Length: 90
Image 1 (cartoon, rainbow, N blue to C red):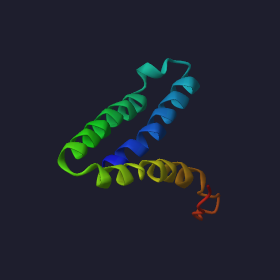
Image 2 (image 1 turned 90 degrees about the vertical axis):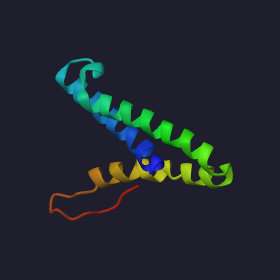
Image 3 (image 1 turned 45 degrees about the vertical axis):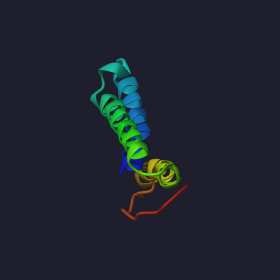
Image 4 (image 1 turned 135 degrees about the vertical axis):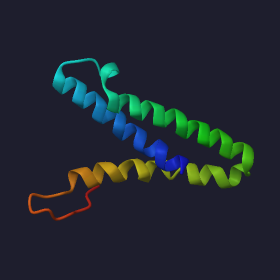
């Protein structure tokens, strides 16, 4: 669960920065950026708790799942064509 939260934080923060830039304001005033930042803190707390509860040999490989989880929302967002067909792109 922590990997999913950590993976999505970068997407939320990037969306917040792009939204703020489009509006001409600071990203610090954007709620989406703050949601990503708070989600990152929650995910890191989850990682810390996982390291205290189970052996490192189990937590570390699961933590690596944050990379593909972070890529999934990006590819889903970019891959919907004009016809509504969903295509997965790297």
